[in-house]
Length: 578
Image (cartoon, rainbow, N blue to C red; front, side, top):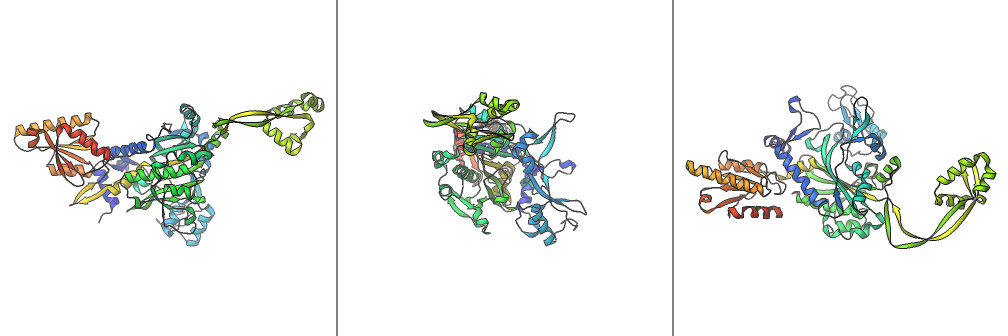
């Protein structure tokens, strides 16, 4: 009996959802094409994500940035150094494997994040060989997952295809902050293509070399997060999450605990309240796609499993029949890592001026240099010493004088007698801070596969794709009955095409079909998940009504053509069937 995966592959190609890229040339691992139906489903997933994560909040904006980035961006971000996976290759046949995945597949051990030395030790101790030919395996080494390119012809500037959307949002933070009238919190979202040079991509849509992600970077003041999140927590505070904390995983406990979003904050399961907020919203979003809540969980990454920029990470996973638990989204607390790195590498100011509610009176110390005395003492060294002293911040000069009694400049100790410290009271209206960042990131193609697997069903030897109505590729199908005499036939086709045009003018995506029996047409619509079908029949010609059929129940109701659009929109808004 065919597996659900094989059935989806067959349906995907038959009905224009997805298939392997470059098929006429034998295909290319890690690349898939989406067909006419798949494109529409994917677009609806993206639109639902935008509605949920972006359009629902005043503090959210959306941007679009380039796929190609100069090398310096990924030097600053740390990806050029850290965005790697361990690989081994067969010394006999040359096949390349991702080392931690190969060990997991052959032994069942979870070795993600272990050092190259530790992986090699396991390969040797377990006597692991190449699964293809039985040959010996090489020592593990790190492979960079960034796709390289040249910007400009004839030995152009080195660049990389982005592996994530985040850096485009980080480098634009200050510009967008100014556009957003210098207010925090601020969320910057982006949907776009990314590329990762995966070592051995397989598992269909699960592991691709080019794919689409939906990502947002949420910039906030960590000192204000607990207070600010309270304004929005009502969206998700009672949402129940299935969580496996890192503390449990370290004890080899893989059972989930069921907690509300509010409790993850109260019990400090999640370090940052805003991280918990977005996890709750992500849970609601995935459930809205038709995934049962008990098939969704959040797994906290162990320290050695986390990305180089993260202080805490949770993977949102969904259980599938084919692959077991698979990651569909990641939630990372990136702290101020990225903004600090871009400040360091670019020299740009990525700070936010945090204005106090009331000015604070404080003592400001000014360190004055006695240039005349210094000049007569130092002679030819005077200019270099003064240049150095003037480059130092006043606070740094004071701290060094206070702790040492002198300031050291190139081996010279400039004692306190050459300085005068003056104190004055000043009103401080605010301070510069580097915002912290929380990041939810979703893989669209993985969501597409999960959605299809949970929507797929068979009834009476017919395939039924139970997609949520708002995710379906077409909202409504329109069919003329095609029976009776020639004139009645023409009249029903004419009325059906006019109804289809009217519904399209209202903004609905309409699937029109007049080929084959009405039963076959219903079946074709069911296979691609169209939730509602309108049939024009004999009665329609006399009383201006049509039948409205519901996909899942096959129930039919009689409705006025004049009210048809309003009725369909009512069901779509509620995202439900009858």
